[in-house]
Length: 249
Image 1 (cartoon, helix red, strand yellow):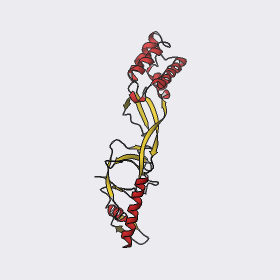
Image 2 (image 1 turned 45 degrees about the horizontal axis):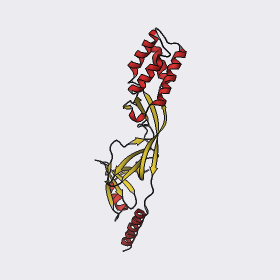
Image 3 (image 1 turned 60 degrees about the vertical axis):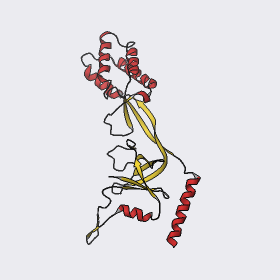
Image 4 (image 1 turned 90 degrees about the vertical axis):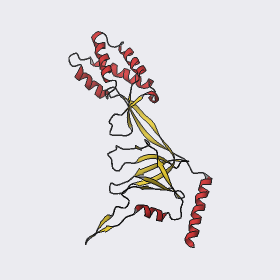
């Protein structure tokens, strides 16, 4: 089981994993030798006489700036010691480097950058499904304009999030609610009549829950870092001074 350990005075983090004691092979020009490793003991030795604590990782708090498949991405998750909550930044600059964990006092939030409709996919799907009786291009454009008006009226907090397979963790898909669908259909009556309206109504009903008519929201991560209190800083300074005193003895 992975365990997150924090050195309280230094605010340094160590992620204990089942692989901490795996040996490493070191190659030289003459030979290859095996080096025994114990990363946890190395961390504890480096922070000797410092107070440490275990942090509990909060489920469903992981978020990344790049696609999940990117090995050098920066990721964030939240952890707590039962009293405070922290943000943990996980990253590495090169694929051959070990992961680095950095503790941040504060929280993170997701800021909406844009909300959009898949216009290209809608046009392509209409061309496929309505090929026997294609809609005039001006009416297709008018339909897309109504969808863009829907974007201005929706409340994302009230929409159902769809677990759509997206390569990017900051791209989230939502299903239109009943109010938005009613607004869409009502305005379509001003554009389409007769068989054309029946065709567009059926198109909406078929695709209201799949990628064609889902709303795509793109976010960015905002780190809300807070400064340590003066009392906290004084406590850390005292701990470090005590450590230096013990080392001198």
